[in-house]
Structure formats: C-alpha cells, structure tokens
Length: 454
Image (tube, one colour):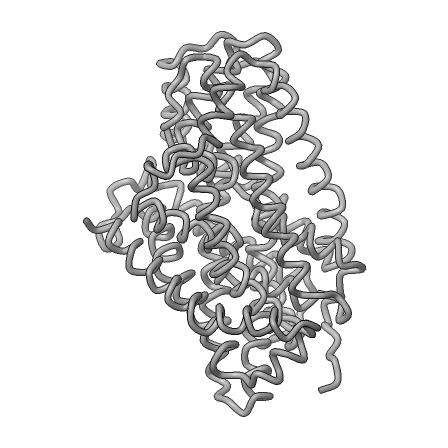
C-alpha cells in the first residue's frame, strides 16, 4: 500500500511525536493519583506489577492505536473506516473512532473545569493568598471556589481558550510548537520541585512511602488498580493517540516510540510522588486525601514552609502545564474530523467545538452550585460525564481497538505497519494484543463498574 499523507501535516521528528504523546499521557492523574495508589498498595512491589500491566495491556493497545492512525493518516473516525475497508471489512468499524472522539470531547468538558481550578490556584499562589494558611481556611477557599459559578466560568473559559488557540494553529504551527515549549518546561519545573522536596525533612519518609518493597501489601484489588491505571494513564481509547499517530513519520519505529512514552509517563508520575509526599510528610499531614491533597493539603503545606509561596506557584504551574498538554490531545481528534468532513479551516472548526465544549463545561461546573440538583441517572452532570467516559467509553474503545488490530485486519497489514525486525518481538506483541490485552480491558471494565455500584 502506498503511504498516505495527512492533510493536517506531520510531526517533524520521532522525538516530537514522543513528546506530544507523552504530553497527552501526562495529566492531572499522574501528579496525584499514581503516587498515592503506589504508596497505598505496596510501594515498589506495586510499581513492578504496574509495569507488567503496562507491558501486557497498555503498550500493546497503544501500539495498535498508533498503527491504525498512521495507516489511515486521518482523524480516528476516518482512519478506522479506511483501514477496515482496506482489510475488506465493514466501514462501520468507524464507530470505534466515534467512541474515542466523543469520549475525548466529553472528558475535556469536565477536565477543563478542574484545570480551571488549577489556574485559580496558580494565581492565588502567585499573589500570596496561601501564606500561613490553616487547613480550615484552605478548605474554605476550595469550597468557596466550588460554590462560585462566576469564578469557575472565568477560569474554565480561559483554559478552553488556551487549548483552542494551540489547536487552531494545526500540527506544526500549533501542536508542535506547543509541545516543543511545554514539555521541556514541564520537565524543568518537575526537576526544580524535586530539588526543593529533596531538601525537606520528609524526603526519606516520602521515598519510603513510594518505594518500600512489601509484597504482603499487594492484594487482588491492588493488581486490579495497577491494571486499570496502566490503561488510563496512556490516554488510550479516546482517539488522542490515534490522531497523533496519524501525524507520525513513516520511518519512525512505533514500538520503540511507544516504549519511550510509557517510560517517560511512569517516570513523571514517580517523580511527582517524590515532589508531593516529602512536602506532605514534612508538615505532618495525611497523604491519603485524593483530589483534596492537591487543592487543600498542599496549599497549607506550601503556606507554612520557607519559600513556600514561590515553590507553591511553581508546583501549580507544573500541574497546569500537564493539564494543558493533555487537554490539547483531547480536542485534536474532533477538530481533525470537522476539517476532513466539511473541508473547514481550523479557525471555524475550533470556534464551533470550543463553544460547544465550553457550554458543556458550564453545565459540568454547575454541578457544584447553580444546578447541583440536576441529576442524570442519579449522577450530577460532572460525575455523569466522568462515569460514562471512564467506566464505559474508554474501556469499550480500547477493547474494540485490540480486537480490530488483533483479529479483524490481517496480520500482514499489522506487520507491515509496525515493521518490527525481530519475529520474536512481533509475535510477543501480537499474542499480548490478541489474548492478554482484551482480557485485561474486560477486567478493567467489569471492576470499574462494580466499584461504582457496590
């Protein structure tokens, strides 16, 4: 098959693709969720289980997504359709692309609300609002923020504009330029914060919390948690990686690029843990606060530490950059599809999508205040969007991609696109994709639903 050229452009190098995909994978969950679940589930023993899950579930499906994207050279919807037709299969496999694109769009609508909270805290840290603040006052600040729709709408709107202004520039002028600046900035901010936390009294306790090796703390639920996070951390099933794969240079090795993305994503999450938990332990605080760790516990910790205002500002700036790079990838698939479907320029496509997702985000943030009594299937609008995407659409999309590449298209097509020189490595990937990854995603699917309704 003659290689197609994407109408949207292409990444200029292999490393730009790796940085872009890593930016998609590294988000708010990396900063607080992964370090916390690591510490609570056996430390180093949990990390080993998690890495096995990454290799057996996350990496095989990610390679399959990139493969389809590069083969189709279009948005996930059209790439799935064209690759299916090339394999002599039904065009309705494009529905898998629809699931991913819609999931990414819906996730962005409430993700931008949380990112708006981060922007609010960046500004608050910058002007010294959290200096010497107590836990009760910090709780009050966060609760007052959630109760104020005007403030939430302002920061949500700013974040939506930040994302759409990048996407409107296209692959090279928008996405690539943003990645070249934002990802190095993220790594620099992360290292600055690591140097800061390494000087705190609680660094040894934070290190032990994350990396102590205690297999006795591993339970069946710990393995399920590792399995679930190995899938969600790589931004699988939401069309982002497939869209980014469609801009990938033909000669780039998909396998090695995906391995690098998985390694960098995991390193960022672990370093974030070494940033957060030493600060928490230095101040004698509870590391098990979930989302409250970021918006209540840490502001108090920074407010009570020497130089805390500066480093608190740097920390929330780091979180904001991570949120920005992830959010860009969530909106790119829908933008690419509008451009392809209607032959639109990116400007009107971004305006239309931006307005729709902004409105949906206003409804999501209203769950905390002016429409808190509105329920969908028993959930607030914010929680409904979170539940449907995380528990149904993403696992379903990931499962379908594994089945599509592993069972529907020909082995020859997959082999030609991956171009893995070692038959042993190709066979290992193919077996994992066909047999292990689908079972893993089904387990994630069932476990997440049981956890929600138990």
